[in-house]
Length: 309
Picture 1 (cartoon, rainbow, N blue to C red):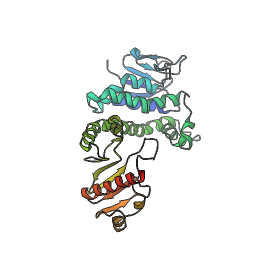
Picture 2: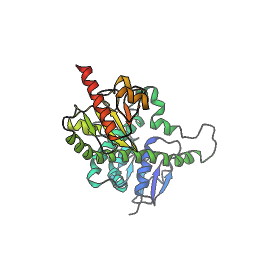
Picture 3: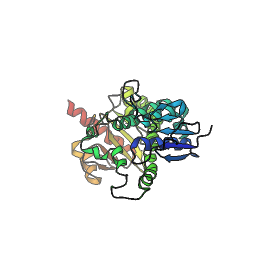
Picture 4: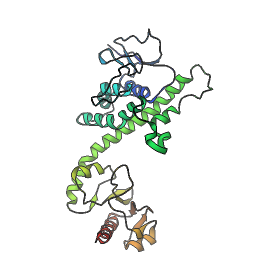
């Protein structure tokens, strides 16, 4: 039977039903999205998907709520929100609809669940405090989406619905961008693996373009690689490699004598014709040609080796 109605609760909204709505609207674009708490409307039927309301989780009846007691739990005992339930049931079809290659769907589905869906589930259920983000807690996605709710003295009878529907394209952009980045990392994996093999024992990894590379380095155990070079527009860049995504600390910094210099000053400090710029924090440098950037990379490696000796 055709899905004609996507039904969630009326009133104030949270990240979980917003995100569930994005997933379901992609898969059932012909369906009407209804926000209600009318019990007569919330009766399951073959042409309805009901989520974040209704007091039950039953995938066969197409109802995905988590507010009942006991609520639905993941295999590891962590709670689902409606987003986790909808993602678990419809996520792979959503990825296919976005054009994710079939051979990558399962892996990206799992990664998105871990990195994006689970935090929403935990926050929505109070199983994680927003304060874990520290001073950045007001900038987390659920909090930012919450800021899109109508202000307290907006007395318009449609204020909540208007804000909800205005928030949907914003949520969609975040979800799709996150997934596109996961898919891009999957595409980059093979390219980086080939470049690692070509680099051999060199401390310099040359890539054909800017791309995600650290996960491939970790997977390959290529701890000897200290710097990455690649073309960028008409220039070439030399980059340090972060130890992880949670720190700015690098395997090795660019030479201290280059910090903050550009053009002739950097050429003189590095001894490389064509050197154009080095960031003051020493994580990236730019040169005008491949030959120049490789020469700078060799200088950077030698500086590290001399510092370690």
